[in-house]
Length: 283
Ligand SMILES: Nc1ncnc2c1ncn2[C@@H]1O[C@H](COP(=O)(O)OS(=O)(=O)O)[C@@H](OP(=O)(O)O)[C@H]1O
Image (cartoon, protein in one colour):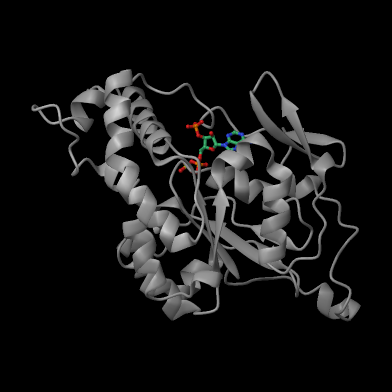
C-alpha cells in the first residue's frame, strides 16, 4: 500500500494562479470538514476525495473542536495539523466525533461560517452495531472486560435502553438539528454511506460538485477488491484499500433485538429524512 499523496497525478493543478504563487505551499485552515457520522464511512470518503488533485487532507483525525484540551490550544495549533497546500487547493479534515459533540457546530461556525460540511450516514442500526464492534475490539486489545451488545442495548425489561451511548449517536436528527441552528441546510452535504460502499463513483461526483471542484475523479479510480469485499482506490497504477479496521465482521446481535432496534429507530429516522429532505432505505 502506498500513501495516496504519492499516488495522485499532479498533472491537473489550478491554472488561474501565477506559477510562483502556485508553488507557495502553506498550512491552511480547512475549507471543508467531514463531521461524521462515526462508522459512517468517513475514512473512505476522505481518502476518495484525496484522489482529487485540488484536495489535500489531514491524514489523522484532528479532534480539535470536540476535545477541549485541543480546542484550548487555539487555531494556530489547529492549522499546524493541516497538510501543506498550494493556493487554490482545498484542505479537508475528518473527525467523526464532531457530529455528535454539542459545542462543535458553534465552534466551527465561529472559525468560518462559510466552511462546507460533509456528513456521511449509513443505516443507524448497522452503524450502532459497527460502533459497538469497534469499542469491543478496542477493549479486547487492551485485555479489558466487555458486555455483550444485547446487554447494553436492552433494559432488563426487554425494551431498548435509550440512554445507550451508541444508540444516542445513531439519533441523527437530534445532532443534525444542532448543526442546522448554525448552518444553512445547503452548506451540509449528506453522503449516503451505503451508496458509497456499493458504488463510490457517483457519490464522489456529487461531493465534487458540492465542493465546487472541477470534475476530476473517474470511475477508473475505483475497483472492487473481492478479497477485501470493498472498493479500493486506484491512481497512477497504484492501489490502496482501507485498513483492516474498516469492514470488520460485526459483533452478533439476535434477530429479535435487531428488530426492536429498527422499530425504535423508525421515528427518529423519519425526523432525519424530513430535515435532509430525502429518505434512505433503512431498516
Ligand atoms: N471502500 C471501503 N473500504 C472499507 N470500508 C468502507 C469502504 N467504504 C465504506 N466503508 C465503511 O466504512 C466504515 C467505517 O467508517 P468510518 O471510517 O467512518 O469509521 S470511524 O468512525 O472513522 O472509525 C466501515 O464500517 P464497518 O463495515 O462496520 O467496519 C465500512 O463499512
